[in-house]
Length: 107
Image (cartoon, rainbow, N blue to C red; front, top):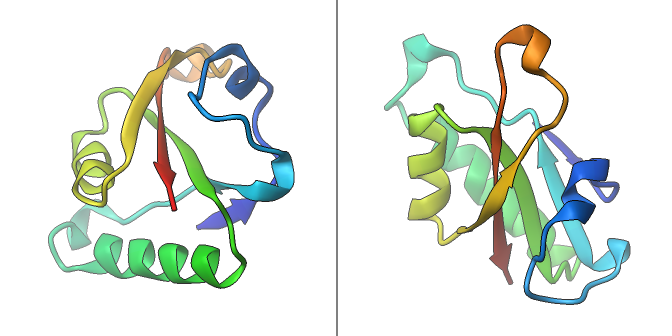
């Protein structure tokens, strides 16, 4: 898991619905759980850690992207109250990853 204030350039192509500075937003990169451990509560523990850290740092919104076919991750984000924002191309089509969904949670 990587947390960063700097967003991918494609994040600037969508309307997030709120006007926040980079300092007010935390972007989650590379939140991953090995398939053998799905359902073991690891994703939940990581998400709780992210939320706690962001609240401690007084972040106003958490943003992230997820491959459009990664249903376990999408389910986790929705469970934690993340809202779907839009679909973007992050330039990974040469890896077979064409579109990514963007999500946001306002804190």
